[in-house]
Length: 316
Ligand SMILES: NC(=O)c1ccc[n+]([C@@H]2O[C@H](COP(=O)([O-])OP(=O)(O)OC[C@H]3O[C@@H](n4cnc5c(N)ncnc54)[C@H](O)[C@@H]3O)[C@@H](O)[C@H]2O)c1
Image (cartoon, rainbow, N blue to C red):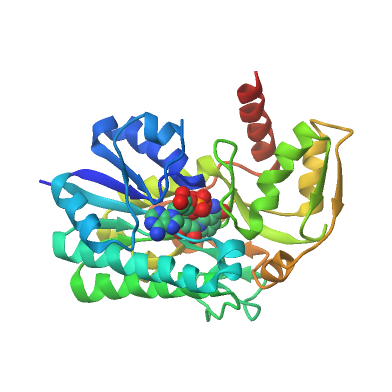
C-alpha cells in the first residue's frame, strides 16, 4: 500500500518544522519534501529526499506521487497574505490552482490530504471572538483563496470521498525559519530585532489583537488532526478553528521585556494594519476540542520563553 508522504511548499515556515516532525515519526525516506525553490543548506533539503516541484505542474505532481508510492500529501505551498495582496493574481493561481491540482491527484490516486486554511477566512463582519460556523466574508484576496480551499476540501470529501482535512491556523510564531510574508510576521520579526538591535518598529498598532500560536502547538495540532479517526470528524474538516494564545502587540512587547528589560518598540502601522483589522481578535475552538481533543500548551509567556530558549540556543 502507498504509505509515503509528499510535502509541498516544504521550505517555508511550517514545512521546515513539519518535515522534521514527520521524518522523526515515519523515518527519513518516507517523507518526500518538495518546493518550487531550492535554498542552499536548508535542513529540509539536507536531511532527506527533496524534489523541485511547482504545485501548478500537474504532470510532475502525478509522476512524483506514482514513482514514490505516496499515500498522503501535506499541501503547504501557498502565497501568504501580505505577499498575496501585493500580487493577487499569483496568490489566486497558486493557492486555488495548486489546491485543485493536489485534490485532483488525490482523487485519482486515493490519497489523504492535509490542506491548511487560515484565520484570514474571516472578514470584518465576524464577531471579535470567531465561532467555527459564521459567514465567511474576507476582504483580502488571500482570505478568499482560503475560503475556496475549504470549500474545495469539503466538495472533494462529499463528492469523491477524498479524505481531506484542514486547520485554520492563527499567526504562527517560530524561530527555525523566517515567516513567509504574512500579516502576523511582526510577532516573529520582533524577536530577532530585540536580540540583534534592542529595538523594533512594528507595522501594526500597539492595541492590535490577533489570534497567534507557537509552532510546536501548530505541528501537534496538524499531526493530531491527521491521526484522528475519520468518523470522529464532522463538517469542520475543511478548516477547524484552533486557538493558541491571543494578545495585543503591546502585551508581546511587555512579555519580551521580561527577558530584555531595555528592549523598545515603536509602532508605525502600514497597509498590513488593514488586513489585521479585518480579522477576529480570538478564535473559538470548541469543535476541535470536542472532535479530536485539541488543547494548546503555550500561552503568551510560555511562547516567548520558548522563542528565547530556541534563539539563544541557535546563537551559541
Ligand atoms: N505561517 C502562518 O502564520 C500561517 C497562518 C495561517 C495559515 N498558514 C498557511 O499554512 C501554509 C504554509 O504556510 P507557511 O507559513 O509555511 O508559508 P511560507 O510562505 O513560509 O512557505 C510557503 C512555501 O510555498 C512555496 N511555494 C510558493 N509557490 C509555490 C508553488 N507554485 N509550488 C510549490 N511551492 C510553492 C514557497 O517557496 C514557500 O517555501 C499556507 O497554506 C498558509 O496559507 C500559515
